[in-house]
Image (tube, rainbow, N blue to C red):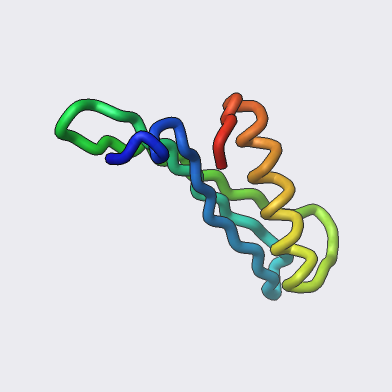
Length: 78
């Protein structure tokens, strides 16, 4: 792992709508540096949205929710 990757966080997210409403999913990955090993901590979140929206709006909600989680985790490099 290169020095540039130490402390780097990444996020994947999605939003979707269906017959039963809208929902979002978020995967947050944080890398931990250990000599000669690469460890990854993954956190997964899912939420049901309590309002009607389009697919694009659900995607934006997932992005916003993921950024809020990253802030609470004190992530510095995303």
